Image (cartoon, rainbow over all chains, first blue to last red; front, side, top):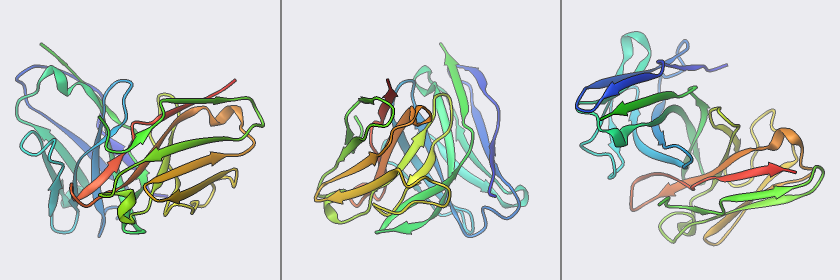
Length: 122
Length: 111
């Protein structure tokens, strides 16, 4: 069974930098795309970006392009989501997920991390 | 504002059938892209429930069924059970945004 384990909850101040992680068990990331989504309190899921584990090809949502950086470290089977300068509006739950494949032309995600709660104070 | 539109909440008594709708546009669902559904229990992570409009991953009860028509899709839950109380999210692909898009989620309450 594929397991994605995310780094723990974090409390930061506005202006600080942050990197959160998503570690896959075994070779669960090899040849897969990894998605990052944001879920603000009481809201739906928002696609932030998706990265191919094999060559780090990345597509960002227009809403998040330039605001975050997504990367992978293949030596430790881990994907990262990074901010250079946090804002209070970045306070949310963040999930990573593995793209299993395409069905009907649309990607679908079969394994999800447990989520990382980010809280940013002013 | 989510790209796909879902009703905020649906409720039903145990044993009842409920349906959750998901409406898109000609850039996503209406363009022919399939719809997938995820179940998110309170305080938990999303879990894949239905993919490719109608397919269920191994282990998902056949009480859950999906359908799609035009620019909309639906998830039906037959024989509603207390453990079905959760948030349900639809997801597709948008060719204008070149990425996956989600609905705002529907909270299902079992009365």
